[in-house]
Length: 213
Length: 87
Image 1 (cartoon, chains in turn blue, cyan):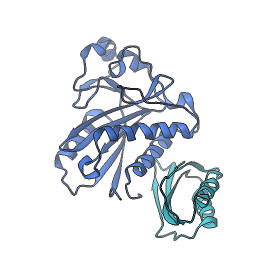
Image 2 (cartoon, chains in turn red, orange):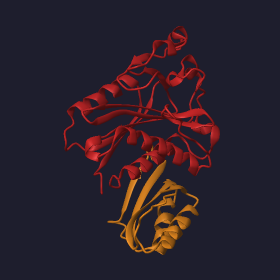
Image 3 (cartoon, chains in turn yellow, cyan):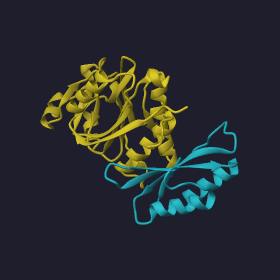
Image 4 (cartoon, chains in turn blue, cyan):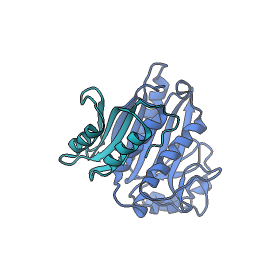
């Protein structure tokens, strides 16, 4: 059965906070007829903290402020993470009830599209129990943090493609001390930022059963 | 590549290919598909461009007669230089 249309919006390179505000506004304003949307973004450098985020996972606030990286307290699940240029960020703004999909199931799909994309390029990756995301040899390549409000999701998936990973060293990424981060460009050539973004979009559209766009 | 389970043939199947938008890429996909199946370039093909237009996602919905037929379609598509990914 078709899940209807998924509208794809390319936001380009944008600071975090206005996009977050727009996601919330979209979710608040939507009704049962509003088509689902997928926003594709690349953020300016920013650290975002989750609802249950512990401040002690921000290891070096002074270094952050020296690097002019803002820290934003958000309303998503999960712990602190970093977004910056060279990381593909996908925000699936979906009506889960209409899709007949649980949030755990959506997390599975988001992980699976990354795992499948990497497998296509000969890279093995895996999930980890109790720690959403995708890992290559124990190093995290993709992070997931979602918010569900009135049965609809915002926030989403961040995939490291070709970026400066150094800011992750200022935090315990996702609240895990010593968790190493990695990125796609370390493991395979042949897929750039735009290719990863496009491939993940196609995979998600297919997995969730949307009409072809 | 897609491993659709529970398909009963014949069926209409949306074949997806992501290509680099270089000269002749779209046409080579159309030609490869035309050798395998009959479809309308107006009604059965949909296209989406990536953010800066470097990639193009093409979906071609065709009547597939058997699993072997489906596999042959994907094999032909993957053999094309401009095809980055098939689904």
